Image (cartoon, rainbow, N blue to C red; front, side, top):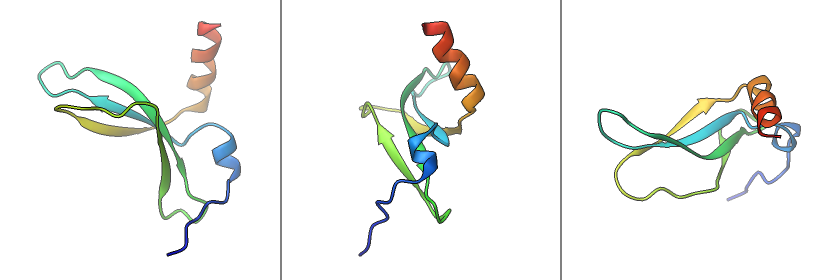
Length: 77
């Protein structure tokens, strides 16, 4: 089986999605755990996790807004 390992321009820039672990319960706590980039052919994406959640909960992918990402980095600096 062939793998698409070619880096696309989107992989070198901001991710298409942010990955979160959402804990179960009424007040689900969202923890950012990684990011995902679209594949060049549009048939999937590459997921890069900084943390691997354990226990109850789910992983949620949300569209990333690069403009918001830039403002978050500026606030942290």
